[in-house]
Length: 313
Image (cartoon, rainbow, N blue to C red; front, side, top):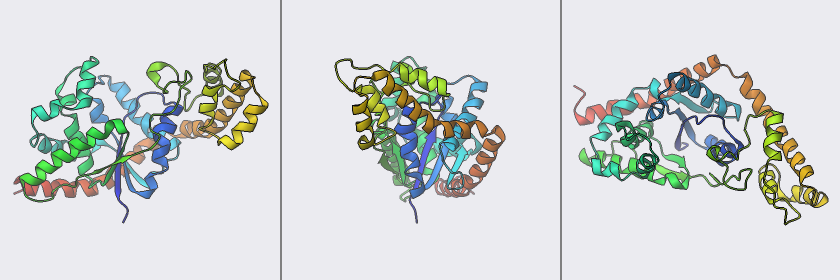
């Protein structure tokens, strides 16, 4: 049997090619090797989002994004966190297993508060809801970037405390799957591509938007090859194919940018068209079918937990 994998999805607005090559593509290359679950983490978004219309739109958008890049809802379970209240019940049980001082050590909590985000109770107990998200479905592995390793350590710690409290392996402790390449996509300024830095190329952008972003790539005038342009081009084509082209256009930075823009548009156009064709109703259908499958497992887990802790009569 395949191992089971889960990842949570939160929409952060318009996606860029850094999101695709840094996170979506590694997932696309991996998810069919597992019994995969994709969860829209809308309850998690409540820690900072207070706009109901934006919340609803984000739910539609993140599902459309994943469907457009090629995730097959027949080959993984795509569901919405808030459609399954088992998450909230198990999160409360796990909250009762850990201490305040333990939660205060969470890097993500401290970082967000340091950046001015409100230190609300939801943000503080976020790791236990995340632990519930994972353990409800007997998840074996969770794909994360290296900087997110602590999230899984918190889940494992909470699960261990629950299991020891009741002297049985009530919930499974998940393993970390570090996806190589996450977060290393260069932006138009040569730094890591990030929406906050304004150095992005839109993943579903129009031909004009792509060309405008590419023509704005910072070039190194001291060399014969524009390294920032080349670094992004390598995402699309191998060095063996690019090197002769860059040699033939040595010093002609504008022409090389136009070639990159054309290659990006060729790559993005089918994604853009697929996304535009996905309706809100189709998203609802995917989420409805997905949560039905998700509950088949989570209901068994929560029933076992309720019986073990003495709530079930």
